[in-house]
Image 1 (spheres, helix red, strand yellow):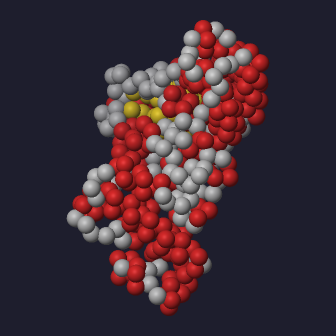
Image 2 (image 1 turned 90 degrees about the horizontal axis):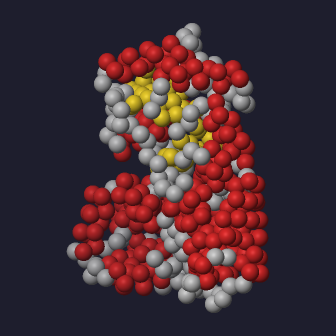
Image 3 (image 1 turned 90 degrees about the vertical axis):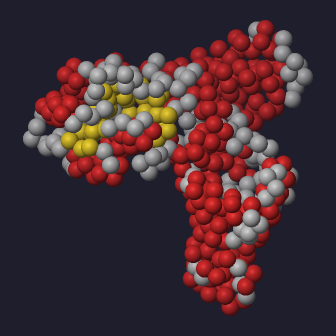
Length: 465
């Protein structure tokens, strides 16, 4: 997400960062580029106008004049205003009520509402240790109830059965009674969507809201709808007392216009952002971290949190002990590291959060993708355990068998072996616990052009962390 916006904004602001003095003309020139970047990112025009006016006012004031590095002061202003535009701080769910806390989900058909109900229930169960029940009040869409039941079973939360002969209000009342009996902490109610906003839909969901009096009324919106997301959010906000927004399918939107528009137009915080298909692909929305990523400055906090949750600590400790004892880093270990990267969303997701990666030219960042890492895993799977532990025994006939078994080319196998040797060198430097040595080792690794498949900054060096 935000790829296009990041590329345009970071290159524009980079040109200003090194300037010793700023004039009205070069500030206005930069702001014109920022304005164009936001519009191309499908940000709503009123939002763009307000944003540029605010940045321009602060840039022309004392903040830049008193700064020792005026160019960097402009970047700081843009970042601060982006954070304000996105909501200033993470807005948590308000669950401090007598159980069950009821969350009502609203949105158009196709916005990913039912999938998001499952993701949110999974997040509440795992991250907040809540006992969750879900119920479908969608009696119109074929198999909507069955879909939610399947997803609830998948994430391991309670499902309240309903059927299409019932009214949505009756379903909701019965679900609340059952949730109280079972001492449920949170009840999430999935509602019917429509292909477009209509009075019948709004009337039904308003009636549900009056009956349930939910603690949270969440508007689920597809990030890929761009400016349309803002107008739809406005219509729902006028019909319902929304408490927050969940952006879905954000991993498929390279522009990011919806995220920058919805908060401004509704005045409601974006509380979560959906970044994939998996049940755990729902993240709390942190405006400061997103603003940093938009400007190509990375998001180390989210990267650390993701590693904490998704990296297998026992396997990581086992590898650390093995390296410390001086035992080699073999191809089986290498395969495990590739798996851990996939668990964290893949190399693209990790790169997005590393500071400095935003400065990579499109030609550089585009050369690294998850497909080459998946190919490496397939090649390793085609080896015997003896070959994985002792790759030096790989002769011509063994290599031919491996590439035939994996459906790859000899160049792919040689690239993997070269990458593995470089990782072995890095692991040797880690034996002494010297992080500086490790980073120097990474800095010496060749980028994709050299055949390693590892991302590097311009000049072949690893970006500074």
